Every structure is written in structure tokens, then in C-alpha cells.
Amino acid sequence: MTNTESATDADGRIRAVLYLRVSTGRQAEHDLSIPDQRRQALSFCEGKGWRVVSEYVEPGASATDDRRPEFQRMMDAAAARPPLFDVIVVHSFSRFFRDQFQLEFYVRRLAKNGVRLVSITQDLGDDPMSVMMRQIMALFDEYQSKENAKHTLRAMRENARQGYWNGSRPPFGYRVVETEQRGTRTKKKLEVDPLRADHVRLIFRLARVGIGESGPMGARQIAGHLNDKGIRTATGGRWGLGMIHEILTRTTYIGIHRFNVYSWRKKQAKPEDEVVEVQVPAIIDKDEFDEVQEMLRERSPQLKAPRFVTGPTLLGGICFCADCGGAMTLRTSGKKADYRYYTCCTRARQGETGCPGRTVPMDRLDDLVVEHIEQRVLAGDRAANILAGLLERRRHDADDASDRIAQLKRQANDADARLTRLYGAIEDGIADRTDENLKGRIAELKAIRDSARADVERAEAKDGNRPIEITPEMVRRFAAEAKRKLRTSGGGYARHHVQKLAQRVEVSDSEVRIVGSKLWLFDALLAAGGVVLTRRREVRSFEPKWLPGPDSNQRPTG
Image (cartoon, rainbow, N blue to C red; front, side, top):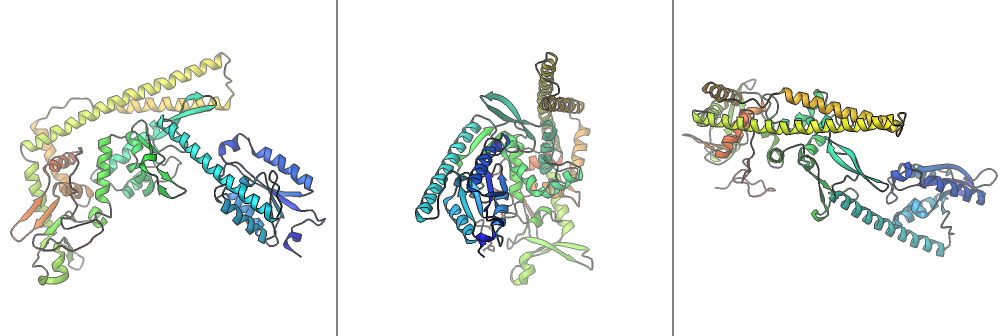
């Protein structure tokens, strides 16, 4: 018995299945195509005397590839031995595939198991002429699909240029709102989501200065902190490294959303001239965003070893031997590694023939460097100047907070006005109060209004506009707190800021030379007091002097 014979009914009738597909979810939701395909296919099978045993419906799936759940389920059934049906009925070959090569591949795969593909609008036989006609039709379908994709993308890019949202889930911290109606199409834009925007600000603040004495946090630490506090993602899930890194590097948060950046089908970035920048409301200041980008570059494993970013040594990665230029690395001694030293790595590997080198107790060298920094930048008028800069930044932040409070008040008043208009429409009989869509809109506006009012109350309660006068006692307390934090052990705060101040420490028998930038001395001490200002470096502070290229790992010469 052949495979074809085994797939027929006991009375000899051929069993058929219907494959029904539409290209977009919108077509499926509005029932534009699938019911009509089903009606025509059933009528076709009835005229042929075939019995329809099943149907596979694919709502909103592209036919340019085979990544379709129902399609794969149907192919698995067709590959069974004996097959569960004899014929696959489609409205047209384009419903099955819009790729000529893939269409022929699957047609031949079906034929090997005795299953045929039949189109009700392109009824062809199995002779060579019919095969050639099917291939020509498939080529035209593929061409038409690519042309449609090109025109659709062009329309979406123009829509983005005008500042409108093209669809998909909005970035965390934003929501999509309807702005205007153009014919049957509703135009939408992004606006700040007051419920989640503060979480975005928290993520950037943790990346810049951390919390308490932790120092600036990495993506893993930020994700752990958010999960511990019960803060969830937009879908209610837990945070991971990828999501945190995406937020920290996404320009949308400074008001520039980039559309058409990546081709998921080709798995590659698109040329810059095809990218469209959409202006959206900003959540983060550009200076703060730029500083976080620089900090991420500093922490990059390709440029700085992770053990120097989160390791236990205060001067790890910046301490070098003055004789050979090699790094001074951690060495321990004692049964429980009680004694810790900075040791020239060249001498540790090659002995005195490689470098006369030296070994310095870790606590002693750390104290010398920190004490020198304190004497240079936290004494006399310098501490007062730093504190004045800190208070100036605080006043700037207070002004920003006032602008945000005014924006929140406008948002609350706008939501309240819309609610009033909806209530008026219900009272006048224009709107039906039992309409589920209307109920949902009222609930949404109430949530926006109440959230904005709550944010206003919290912001006004902080009282950040009170003037502060700098006194000698305040300067003394500020300097003492900065010194305490710079000497705190067991956390990342001291390591981060000491390494900003001392960008390179060279140790010889007679002296310890500290190389740093005066601009960054000022900025880092502001950070020690709780504020970070942004200045752009001409050269990365962590870049070793002997490193000739990013892909090289040569030892120092001379």
C-alpha cells in the first residue's frame, strides 16, 4: 500500500487540511481574511469530494520564513508515516510561502511522503509546465513581498521622523498615548510614565554614585538591588544584566529614540543613514548619561580586568613598579593570608634578574596615597571651594525638581480635565457608562492623576530650595566625612574615588609618585561629598602607557 492510499478514508475519499494565514496581527484581529479563506477552501474541497479533517490557522505570521508554530505543527503531521492527510489546501501559494526557494523545498519534502500542496486560486497539475508556472508565481510573490516590506518601512521611517511611535512595547519608563486621528489611523507618541520614570532615575543614580558607601554599582549589583527592593520590570519579571545594560546605554532616556537601528532578520546593524532619530521627552540629563557611558567604558572587561573593578585592592590596576613599569599585584603570606603586599609582578615571575623590584605592605602604601590626597585637596580653602561647588549643584538639582513638579501638576490637571469631559459626556447621554473601553479609559486617567499628585507631594516634601550658608563648622564636617569615606574599607566607594584621583601610582625605593588630573581631583572630591560633575577626558585614565593597541598584550620594552 502506498503512502497516498494510506492517507485516504475507508471509502476512498481524500483527506485534506486547510492552512489559513494572514500577514499581520491587525488583519487577524479585524477578521479581514481568515474567514474568507476558510469559506472558499471549504467550498473548493466540497466540489472536489475531499473531506476536511483539520485546519491550521496562523494569525499574524509572515510567510518569508518557516518560524510559524502552526506551520511547523502541520509539517510534523505531514511527515508522519503514514501521513495524517493527503492534501494541504491553501488560498494561494503566497499563503504557504513568499520565498521561492523555501516553497520548492517544502513542496518536494511533502511529495516524498505522498502529500500534495493545492492552491484554490492557482490550480495547477504536476506536469513540468505546471511546475514551471508555480515557480514563476513564487518568484513574483517573493518580489511583491520585498516591495511591500520596502514601502512599509519607508512609511514607518517617515512616521518616526514626524515624532510618532510605530508600535511594539515602549521602553521601560515610557508609555504610549494616542495624540490624533488621521482618517482610520490613530497616531501615537511616547510620554514619560510617572510610575516607572523614578525607577529609571534610580538605576542611573546607582550606576553613578551607588547607595551608602557601596560606590558606583555595576549592572549585576543594580539588578540585585532592584530585585531585593521588589521593583519589577514592565512585564512583572525580575531584573537581569541585559535589561540593566540596555537602560544604561539607551539614548531614549536623554530624549533621542533611535528607530530602524537593527535588522533582526539579517542579524546586523543597519547603516547610520537609515536610522531615524525621534525626539521624545527626556528622563535623564545628558551630562549624567554621558558620565555613565564613560564609567561603563572604564569597567569594560576588554579595557580593564574585572578584578581591578570589584577586587579587594585599593590601588589595583593603577599601581606600577618605577623600575620596569610592570604592575604591582597582590601577594599574601601567613597561614590564613593575614599579611597582604603589593609586589612587582616582573620580579614575582622572573626573580631579581627580571627586575630588582620591591614588595610594599598594602596597608602602608594605601595609607600613604590616601593621606597625600587628603592633604592636597581637603585642606584649607580647597575644602570650602569643593563644598561651594556641591551646594551649587544642589541648587541646580532643586531648580530641576521645581520644573518637574510643575510638569507633574500640569499632567494631573490635564488628566482631571479629561475625566471631567468624560463625565459630562456620560451625563449628556453621549457616552454609554457601561462601555468597557470607557471604563478602562476612566480608570487609566484616574491612575495618571493620582500618581502625578502623589509624586508632587513627595517632591514638595523634600524642601530642597532652602538656602544654606557655608560656615567653618560645615566645611570641617564636610572634610571629615569625605576623609572617612575615602578611608572606608570593604566597599567600592573608596576604591572608585581614590582611583579617580590617583590615576597612576609609581613606586620606587625612595618615593611614591602619584599621577593625576587636577580637573578630576576636583570632580572626584565633589563625588566624595555626594555630587558628581562631568568632564570629558582626553585619555582614559586606566589606559596603560605601554599598551600599543586594543588587540595587543605585549610586555613593556625598555
